[in-house]
Length: 403
Image 1 (cartoon, rainbow, N blue to C red):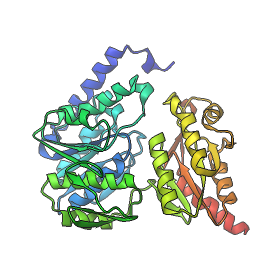
Image 2: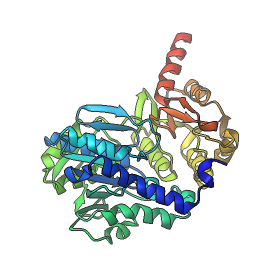
Image 3: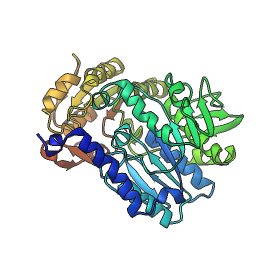
């Protein structure tokens, strides 16, 4: 049992509430001097944060952002090595102070339910709150979907100015129920800001043609969220269009790291299914070879067999392997994920190697669960340096040497 588990919950809550106040006090309540945009939802947060920042920069605003994979203040960018979407302690307030000091007009923050649960959103003056979507995730940590949804809603509760909501999501009414000075809805079926004439890499918003390198309907929603935020800040659609056209994508998010090899984060059933569907739509002549696992540490055990079922539904071949076992038995997690046709390989590098070596000309290898994460978290609190994209490159180079 860890020391943290010995502390009563009320004492932990008091500590978590105190820390953001202490941080805000030490750093001079920086969010009062910059416009802060918070993005929450189950999927799409990281891409949406990056897209918002790119549009604001295209319009000439000095911009900072904080996401689960990276931080940026104007031209300075560095990786998020905390392995958490919203860093704890005083880090967020410190980041906002640095953004203010560098002269930024905006800071865009990825806001997680776990961060909200630990009150890391407090003492931040949010100008805009954005809701992307919500599906089953972190259910055990929040003790139910309703509590998970309510945690997300707290961002809207503290944001009094502008709310941007995906109206196509079946839970949109909940997020629209919070009072604000202005509400903007978006979607493909419903919403004020709608995407029409959707093609493989283009669509229109208010008769303006948007071209994008981002594939999939889920990315149309991400673009719509970002454009809605931009419009709320007086940025016109032409500027939005230019920024979206230039945007290369987010590392580890449906990233084609080699010919017919894709790496993606996709840790929820909803995200995984949409990823496979997008690949099937855009590479209809290809068969999928899937490499996946599931996180340990007691996190959302319910979804493990579902992830395996989805992989088997869409894939020609499935390799189930290690991901981030923490203190759980990796093989036990693999057994919970694996379906009847899965090949179980505990060593993630070996699983990737075998997937690449078994791929035929008409196959596409899809490696999910980690994206561009720099660590693999194992027992005893250890972090092993890791990057699926780097492993793919190394194994393909080794394969070429032997050819």
